[in-house]
Length: 193
Image 1 (tube, rainbow, N blue to C red):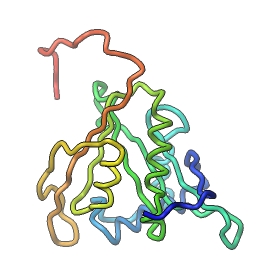
Image 2 (image 1 turned 45 degrees about the vertical axis):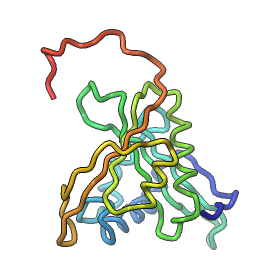
Image 3 (image 1 turned 90 degrees about the vertical axis):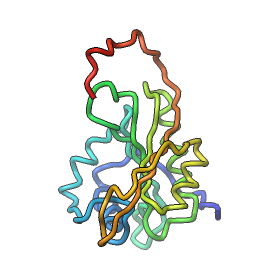
């Protein structure tokens, strides 16, 4: 893997990033099965998603920027997110993470830079596990997650249909450092999944 240039910076995502972030995501919607969305989004449709990732807390959005484009504005190379794993309260200490890179930014170490910054930002949060769903095949994503200590925990076979075929999704899990420990075990008889 080639080294990324030192000018690449990572910072929290902002509403001014909405157009390039939408463009990056729409590339994966149109061209790949790496996301199972099948219709592209407008920036206005993606605004609630962006706003659901504040600058602090367990649900983050970080962007990688490369300065020095022709118009002087930084170029968004990609982004990483930590999002709620599931909506029920007991899942609150788990997050689902992902990285999306602009097509020209792959293979440059940008995903590694983003994940490094994301997990550093999450280190102080009350989180226990991070999960990643990887549509298969996707060897670069598998290598990235392996490098960050994720382990494969299972595969849903032919779980999604896109481009006229079925795709598998492999799930990966990573333990995170928790700042608080559970206080008591819940009553299993009251559990609902």
